[in-house]
Image 1 (cartoon, rainbow over the protein chains, first blue to last red):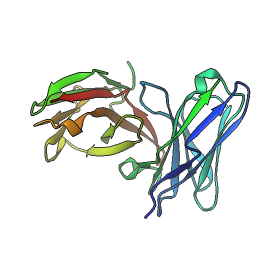
Image 2 (cartoon, each protein chain N blue to C red):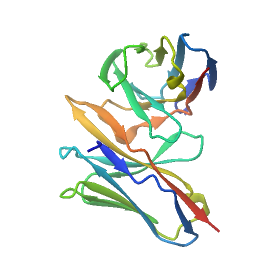
Image 3 (cartoon, helix red, strand yellow):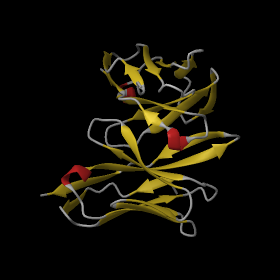
Image 4 (cartoon, rainbow over the protein chains, first blue to last red):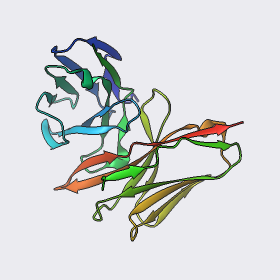
Length: 114
Length: 112
């Protein structure tokens, strides 16, 4: 049983560019949440997708957008990259939106913005 | 007051010691709480869930104090392999969906 997978594992971009990160949930999970974790900080909730719609959103600007596909996989898009967007981006899947106790994290994508 | 606050540490303890971390939360309506463990440069992994007064799993005990709005994690007989960052998580329900807030984490280093 594959767990949560994310791609790519590492990414280097320059300021102003755009980036797309991908996530495949654990088998049987239909809810995907995205988090940003800066160095030395806890993960910050970006948004949650369920039934192909954004259901909850944290305090992130509109430059952060996402999508969920019919197979429950998800993408995180960040436009107009800033130096401060450098972080580990974690995807987590769960059985349903309210089930934090079933939440599994992927290994993350480490984004560096130069 | 921050939604979730933790002492960042680091806590440096010898093997075999007992160590406890606290996590305070601001939303009195929160019903469930979680402790995650995160190893260096790895993803967080669920350690324990707390729904009522507490939970125990082997050497690990989590307790909830609703009146003072904090949860604690107690680790007995610390092992070198317990060295990690421990993250407190407090979900906030909103119409059947949840916004999940992580604390900044408490770093534990168990010393031989």
